[in-house]
Image (cartoon, rainbow, N blue to C red; front, side):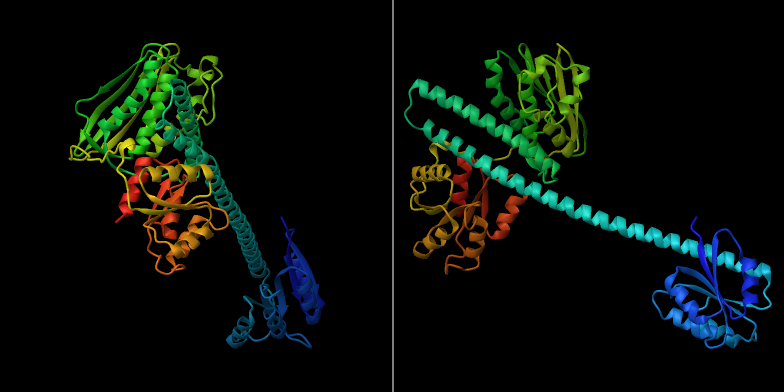
Length: 528
């Protein structure tokens, strides 16, 4: 325990000796002086906690000494107890308290009262210093927390920027490959070329799937993943997912069976995109690890209350199964279990991790039942609100027979040569009058001398990016062109990408790789 410094100031040495004897304790360090001037120096140089000061002293009395101490920031916190033999009249006590003393001791001193008072003030000093120390620690912790928060935010921002850049750099060329495959499919090909093109399409879509898995897990961890609820035709969603993967099942000689509860509502309130992602991942996984037998997609209604239903989705396979030891591992990111029969099938190890996180984000729990060599059942259960409407009307366009957009003038701003070639070919097939530039500054040059119905603007371009160009157009940089419809292209994957584009002044956003039907529909929307 640190000793408390206690100062005794009295012009009579015998009084000092008496007080020293009375206050002698192991936890007190007593410092004495007969000179008020010396007392000031001591208080300035040493950490004095308590001072017992005689009132009547030659040269400088106790009141004057304490007044000087209390007017100095370095010594103003010293607890002063006046020791006096003068009159007990209230005016003297008031004067002493007014200059900053906290108590009075009257001579002749009562040893018990003097000792008790000093002890109580020592405890008070210790409490105050402990509180002060805790406050300093809290301030230190607060500063560290602020620093850690700033570092975390910077790290998060850096991660988001990395995700955006990585997304752009990877998804942009993939968009070009998928688009070129689409254009080549419309050309005259022999059987070998069709086969090679089919393999190219499968490979590019597989690569896109891996990229999307990596970006999805990054979005979830960055807290940028949103669940968007809307009316969903659940029966149609289930059938579409099953039909898409039925071809792969047939190639392996497997039966893909649907078992849908008759009481299943037609329309539920759900995020159809994420629900489809869960179905596709689980069905694809089941087909991958099943060599003979069948896969059953079972949908049950377990309970119903008012306008909600408790629905259980199960993907049941007769595949290789998973040992008890490995059942927890398969949900970990990038985890491939050591079992050769499983690891030989390849993959990123992200599919089930994403499914698990998606199910949890939707308020459900992913469950697994499996026996090695017998098969596996992946299931999740959730309460869904259902709508009374029986069918959702959707406009279905055949990408091969989309109507022409003759008379439409479009400006394309895209720096990637392959993507520019792809977009120009698509627009020319729709009989659009199209012009193209590769950077933001050339957009302004084009707008000065030409009128366009729509601008298709890439978000990332050298010199001045698409967002900056959009802001300048909206600000009236080119007179009379501030209201032209702008659709931005982005390879970003964050939900905030759309918000940023709209904030910059874009009318809409199209994600790369883009769907040709969606591009046609968006252009039609702004073509008056």
